[in-house]
Image 1: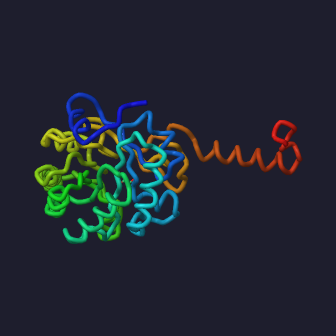
Image 2: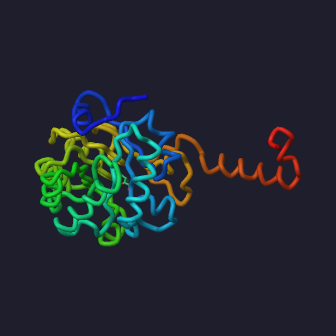
Image 3: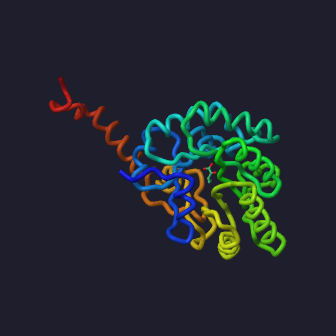
Amino acid sequence: MNKKMTINSIQKTKGNRPLVMITAYDALFAKLFEDSVDMILVGDSLNMSFAGRKDTLSATMEQMIYHTNAVCNGAKNSFVVCDMPFGTYTTKEEALKNAISVFQQTSADCVKIEGGEDKAYIVEHLVSNGIAVCGHIGLLPQSVRSEGGYKVKGKNPKEQQTLIEDARAIEKAGAFCMVIEGVIAEVASEVASCVDIPVIGIGAGNDVDGQVLVFSDMLGLFEEFTPKFVKKYIDGASIVKDAVKNYSDEVKSREFPQEVHTY
Ligand code: KIV
C-alpha cells in the first residue's frame, strides 16, 4: 500500500515526477484505483457520467458530500479532492460555509474550485480558514452555458496572459495545487513553469506537473462523446455489455446457475 499523500508531499513532486489523479464517485472504484494514483477527485463530472446530465451544473453540495464519503470509505489511504459544485462559492461566506460542511461531514483532504484571478479572494478566504484548496483554471466546465460551449483556452496572446495571471493569482491566494483544463499544450507548459505549485493537466499536453482523467472516460465506459484528450485504456462499454449479454443468455438457456453456484 502506498503512503497517503499530503498537501506537502504533493507540492514536493513539482519538478521531480508527474502527479497522477483520477476521478471516482463511489467506494467500489475508489478502492480499485487507490494503489495506482496519488489523488482521487470526486468531480462534479459525476452528474454527467452517472446521472446522465448534459453538463456538471446540476451537482449539489449534498451529492458531493454523499459521493465524497463513499470515495473516502473505499480509499482510506488516498488523498481525496472534493469538487465544489456550481453556485456553491459565489461569495466568500457561502464558499466557506459549504467548504466547512465538506470538511465536517467527510474526510476529504481539500476542495477544488473553478476560476482564476476572479476567484482568488475566495481561495484566500478558504485557505485562511483552514481549508486546503486545489484551483482549476483554463476551460471551466461550470461555465459551459455562459461561454456557449467547451472552449479550448490559450489560443491567442490575450488568453495566454490571462492564464498566467490566473495561475499566479491562485497560487498567491494559497492554493496548494491546481488543475489546468483544455489549454494549448505549450501555453499550459508555460503556465506550469510560472508557478511553484503543481499544475495538473487535463487536455493540456504532457509538459505539466501531472495528469487527471475522468475514470469513466479512460475506462471507455462513457459512450456519449470522447474528448480528443481522452485515452481509452480499455473498451469498458463493450466489456460490460458482452458480460451482461452472456449472463442474460445463460439465464435464458438455464446454463446459469450451475452446481458450483448452488447451495
Ligand atoms: O469534475 C471533474 O471531473 C473535473 C475534472 C474534469 C478535472 O473537474
